[in-house]
Length: 384
Image 1 (spheres, helix red, strand yellow):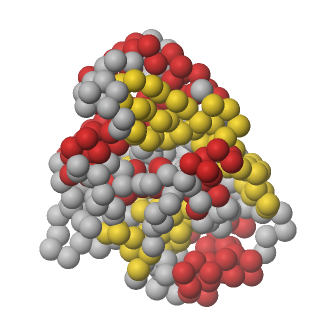
Image 2 (cartoon, helix red, strand yellow):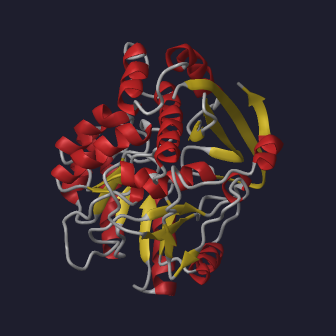
């Protein structure tokens, strides 16, 4: 079996109501989907293009095409190294690794379909058949009041979520903390609360904010400082008792090595569409488990990224092993973005359904997704 064709689809979907985090403004959702076709007709899908302009990884994949055509798609490790080493001098982080991520994901999808097995089985086997989901939302919006935060959280709880992630990192830490206090007062200890600053604070401010988050029983404090500041992560982690999470803006097992070996985080958050696909993220997960660090992947993409992340989640070890594993303690979870995104909600013909706060992990070959190509064409603005 040989790789015959590689096609990319740059997707953009405008939003009815823009929102923002501490560092980014969102008025549309985007994705770069990667389609790889073999000479015997098997098609694999992958995703990248989540951080920054999706045109950049699309251009990088054009560079990779001559390296990949006529190669055996089952040789995932070989092809990952071929792409990485070809661009090592200038592409160890950022859009080049995003491009590798999308290609690698599509290759594993092909491998699963060719062998009739889900990707999770090929990665070493499934630790679980379903995973608890938490809701990511509660972004900043103009005129947002504490009542609005409470109302939005109530909607997520009514959907069945038992955990929520709240955006913090505004230029007024006290207003960030007021939101957490209001949610805890309204909903008590019945829900997990996670916070995400999107690296908006310096270490000193992060420690001050973190002390209050401790009092509110927050589970984790995500990206308290900029991703380059591993020493700052350690300052924050050593000063607080709540879990420190990070890594969504880190790339490959090489990049995660410093975070993990230095015990700079309690929870590592690689994104399959960003950090190097299955090939790199499996290495990240294995390394993290050696150092007693739980992996809870970041996911912010279309339905392709969601299905792929579920396959990865099936393989992640409980840290540490326990006869009664529990999310919020030693077991991984699925991040479920709840902001408007037709690329997530409409792109798959087979939908993911939550029961009792958990989502079942697909058992079909490959990623387990059936793509709605009419939706793909509707939102495609550039084909490569």
